[in-house]
Length: 395
Ligand code: TMP
Image (cartoon, rainbow, N blue to C red; front, side):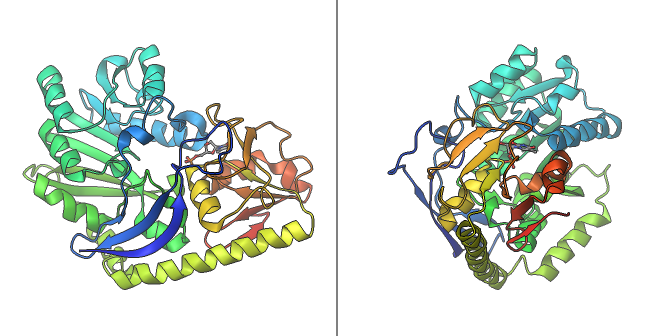
């Protein structure tokens, strides 16, 4: 049974950055629910994939040094630990991971044609298609079974999760490995990072819910890694249950115990979280309004989908945060979805004469602090809502 615990109000499509501000932009109710049987957390209203993932999808994995480094490290690990003949990536985006492999050994799946074009141009075989059972069948006929399937921040974006894992189970060889990574529910609850919820993020996985869900597809988690990416993610190493050559590591049960201790299997935990989210909104607005009274100049850094949730939930307008700066070409000179706040191109001197900078990309805090030493030296401060709204100048 699905029980709702959080209402984030009306939210526009998070990754559709309009050229002009529209007062009557279409918004959808964003409510978050917990399934008392499967322990899965998800959003209650699903938007059709084609509305979100199309030829103008602006998110590029290669835009941050942190992500590129994470993919490079993982590709080295995959080569050493699993030596796959073929690696298939579901949601290959602009090729941040597959760029680390030989063209002959990888297949990308990417429905957003603007992104698929980038990997195709570099000579990587890329299917411009949505991941589903039909495609898995087509791939199996063409390429045979696959020994390594990888997917980062993609499976949680697909509504029909049964079809997702049925398709994976069909294509994965008997001894094959599935590696997925997605934001961690535990980290979200700990950090009060309610901005992990937006219309694209249909599910927020925990080890408990993933383990429960994949069982019926003859799949089990055998290893895990906690990652710092996307504000705290988990990398799940998965195999077929009937592959007895690989042992399930202790870390899997350990992590499940940690999650249970934290109450991720109980509805009451999420009700408490919702209360903390309301408080977080009040505190953030209080900080921004005080800065406005003091006539401080405040801009945003990183026009992220996460920031869209915050701006629309807290009703933050251009009087509180004047602009956002971002490096992504697809976002520049456009507006933050649902708000009259323009995104301008990030330049080395973007923070000059700014007093406070709201971290939209708080998940890249370290990278940003490294880059903006001058701003900090001159007395500039960053604002974050993680784990509780505050301004700061030291990590
Ligand atoms: P994400 O949090 O959804 O991964 O998005 C990060 C966004 O932040 C992306 O639009 C790129 C932007 N960004 C900058 O503009 N400057 C930076 O230094 C970093 C790390 C990210």
